[in-house]
Image (cartoon, rainbow, N blue to C red; front, top):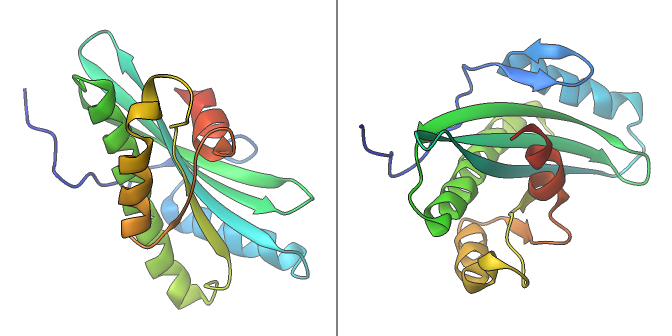
Length: 170
């Protein structure tokens, strides 16, 4: 088996799934985000990135990274992408991989939004950890990892990007 990359990468060359539009490439996702904002440009928007994972057949772990565009008070749209990696051996390893995938993707989005003049959007990373349950032991570490990379972070129960949207597809 190969080693897990130290810094995971969400593939911008891979396809994303949209519940309403089907398969889209990264450029199509960005265009849909821009157009969605133009439809109601007087609204406030949040961009949310969250990743959830699930082990499969004891052989590998599937990670779903969701990009949610929340039109505050009026719903939103989302896109998701699957990444398959070597089986994570511990919950800690899985949660860190989830956070790193989200951070990596958020950095790519910021870079692309800089050129699209969408930087005034609020960008949050939602992590699938909370003060209750198994992940309570690593919540401080994971929150520190996300904040240390310069992002706002939400944990359970507010982290719906990871714990509800991405989770729906794992």
